[in-house]
Image (cartoon, rainbow, N blue to C red):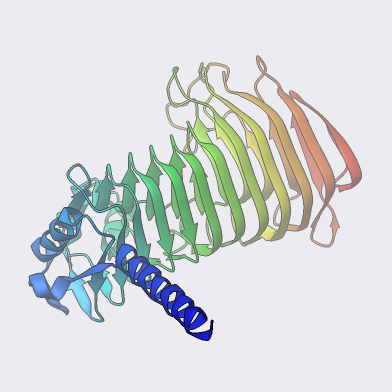
Length: 397
């Protein structure tokens, strides 16, 4: 009997070992070091082709793969990583170094993107820094010279199952990170740094995308910390620190007549310091089929923010060639809850809505915003809604 039990234990242990071995085999990852393909960490040698060769090799594997970028500084020009022929179900780009743009801003400035991922699936970017060296282009623009538009630092287009974790983006020429036409995107623990007067340097821009989550991030830039464009659905933003910058903005909307709407956006546990706006919804005063609905702004601290809560349906930032129509964007079911802090201007809440399509279902709940340690003001035009709990400044809905 003892011999039989011993045999059974031996068989079970053997099965256990086989199962462990199978797990290890199935979860094996193949690693591709960019230095193997000729990348140089000296910040001077153009490593663009080496990165592309590493990408091609990783894509060609049927296993989960890692593209490894060791410590050092790697010079890269404009490059597109395409997923059309990828066999690997999961590609992790592990960055222990810094990727740097060319010193001459015109090299990137004439491209739309610096680093772009197009039609990829299952790509993760972990760690590292991207230094786009955008300040010479900002200087050019400030002087009104004949300057290129500039490049977005990192973009994902028509992609799904994307993760960006622990990345630092420095001094982008234009937008830092763009998510366009994507599904299931997670952005966590990123840092964005650019001068407070750097033009069009949005921290994260999301449009035409579904199921995007942005958490635990710090954004200091010269434009919107996060901008939310048409066609965004099921966006969750939580624990984001913004400032300097232009706040968290939905829009601008009504850029075109036929425009997808924005819906199911939740922004929780955020803080704004010295920003031009806190929570903003903005649309041009022109006809459009677009909308913004089911928006939740919950739990925020505002410190010296010029427009803590604002809906602006007559958006025209430089008052040049402004449209003279009535905004067709329909804004409804917007909740502001648990928002406190200080306004840098007398008007802390401003709802300037469309005459043709008034804002509907606006809710203010437990809002406490002051100006110079005294009561602030609120203004409402074509806005319909209710208040709950304590709301300061006094309700104008």
